[in-house]
Length: 296
Image 1 (tube, rainbow, N blue to C red):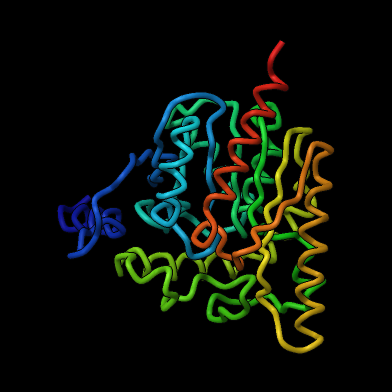
Image 2 (cartoon, rainbow, N blue to C red):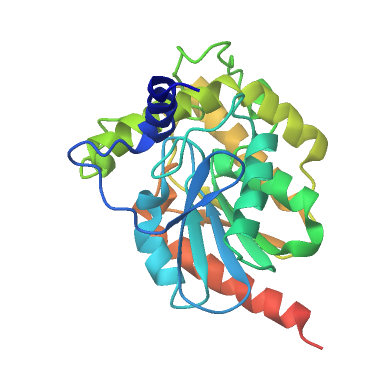
């Protein structure tokens, strides 16, 4: 192999981490999962460990406040899916089955041992459900935060994009880059999130079918947190859409007989930013239930 070719290949490999001005320091650690590296940020001690999977357009930095609070209770980790934050770009398609597989590799490489309590926001709910179904003996509980439902696109009459060029609709789009909650995020992280979210959106049809087929979870404590403020509002059609969303959220509670449904009454879809305390309370409750169930 020529020296020039080696230089080109090295440049491509390092492209996601060509530290342009403004790229922040890595807060956690990166681990190789088979030719590309993923970033995970863990704080605190204790078991079970909390594992957080973010929504479309978010990375680990968006959950820092929740990470810091949850770490006071037990060991808590939030990771970046490939292409987000400090993780390398991963192979396509970016569907939930692949993402759940990558998460398992990451947890092994990082030596984060089970049991796990999985927290999934929005699209992250798809991913943790597939992880839980594949590794039921590793799961101590789940928290679904205004999480996606496999029937939502049909029930809400949402036409899923056939390419990554269409990024409309509040339920499937990446976070608006002009969103006021995202103003302080470094441009490089926002740009990476936007590009990666479009790849995940283009695979949403695959992901929803995967969850419909394999999205069952073990019998563990489950808390479903739903938004209390409508994202659809105005006319009768919008109100019906919001009602359907609530029905789908209620259906998620049927994934486990040990479940409850609570509402973040002061939040829209972005509950982690708008009402983080309700997620911390849910984490504490699921931990207590999981420890009680595991005790002799």
